Structures are given as C-alpha cells and as structure tokens.
Image (cartoon, rainbow, N blue to C red; front, side):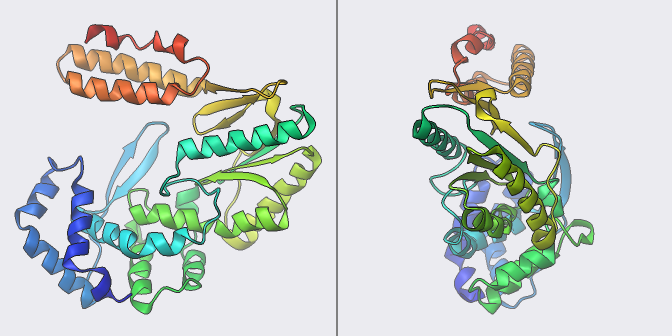
Length: 342
C-alpha cells in the first residue's frame, strides 16, 4: 500500500476515535480534537510528503505488576501509529505467526493462552494416564529493551511490505528515545506487533526443528511440554544458542525446567497437574499479595472520597475476573472487604 492509501482521512479518523477511548478527558486529546479536521489534514500532508517526524517521548514508570519504564508519544503520533497498525501492520504480521503465539491478537489473549496450556496438559496426561510430565519455561532477559533494530528490520524486509510501508516502519523503529540503537518503547502499539514477530523464527525452530508439539508463547514467556526431562535440557541449550546467534537475546534467570505435578507459573497463576489429571489453578503468592495491597489502598481512597462507587465497582469486577478461574476464589473473595462498604 502507498502512504496515500494508508493515511486517508477516514483511516486516521477511525484511529483517532480508538486512541481517545478512556482518554477523552486528557488535555492533549482535548487540544487535538478542538481542531480535529485541521490536525488530521496536517498529518495527511506530512505523511504523504514524507516530512512527518515523531514527537518527543514522555517517560514515566508503572509499578504493577513490576516496575517498568513506559515511553509514550504525543497523542497525534499515537493516532498515526494506530492507523498504520490497523490498516497495514496487523494483517501482514498476524498471518505469519504460529497459532499458539497468544498475546495481543484478535480472539486470543491470556484466557486463550491458559486454555491452550491446559489442553496440552490434559492431552499429554491421558496418553499414559500419569502426571510424570515436565515443562521448560523460557523467559527473555529484558525483552523489549533488548530487541535489535537491525535484526528486526531485516526480518520485516522479508515480508512483502511496500517501500512506503517500510519508510514508516523504519521511522517508528529508528526514531527512538535518546537515539537508542536497540529496544522498543512499551508505550507504542507497534512495539507489541514487532515484539510478537521478533521471536517468530524461534517459534518455528521450536515447533519444526526441536519437534515440540505442545508449545505456547505469550510475548516472551514460552512454555514447552514434554515427557523427557533430558530432552528439555537439550532444548534449553538449543534455544539459548538460537537466541544469541540469530536474535541477539539472552534467557533470564527465571528460565527453568520442572515437573508439572509441582506446578508451573504462567500469566499470574500457578497451574498444577494432579495425579488424577485434574488441573488445579492457584493465584501466585506475589499476585495475591499485590491484590490485597491494592484492595486496602482502594478502601482508603474510597473512604476519603477520592474515588467513587463506579470506580470501585470496575476494580471489584476486575479482581473477580482475575480470581474466578482459580480453585481458591471463594476463600479469597472474603478478603475483598470493600464490597461490604459500598
């Protein structure tokens, strides 16, 4: 596609509507939409003449579930990237990903990833009617900050992107905060798609060369299921070598091999395969502590009148949705004490 075809007024307007959701009260959003038609037409002219430049990144930290640096572009640039992702990037990358690459994709996500893991566990269990099954859990050290720009661009160049599409891709990747030569900003939607694609060669290596039938990935969290612990030790070595040689990445200290009867941590839960084939799901201890701490903070904010009942209701539902799949939900619901105060 050409830049004229991607960045039409209609496409940018749709991207603007999606970007403003839940942010319509923000000052930069209000300022942008106060002259909406003019601002969109300015973007169209800058983009189609290739005079467009990304704005300055704003940096801030989030602390849940762990400390992360977020680097966010101004609102107008988020509209541009959203438009490019929706019109072009998603479709061309998504069809090249394996089925069990679960993060940030339509009709997939955490629930899908957990269901796939459970399906693999049950299937393997019923082959031999026992839970003597092992897992290899791989995790990339500082994944987003470690992605090599040149390697990523070489991968993307092999997809049938047009010259105009590659122009905007290079701009998004290369115009980084502090002129960094590696890493992707966590605040960009494009970063999610680039990160999903960056490990695609590794996915195919695991499935096709290592012949791992039961494999699931959620961003940089990878789970391999196999009966032979020794073979998983070999897989770990092969994956480490592949990451260093082809992706300029390293596995971190959370990478481990274990037995499923003892449980595996994945997406905030601990999944345990019992000797009867039943899968028991529990909240990770760290997740439970964070949730209890958050609940206490909400109580204080509500009692001081800082947050209202609607906000509490939304947070309560979020907590319930997170714990409802576990086997300790009834016990843990008793700790959500703010429900009684509303």
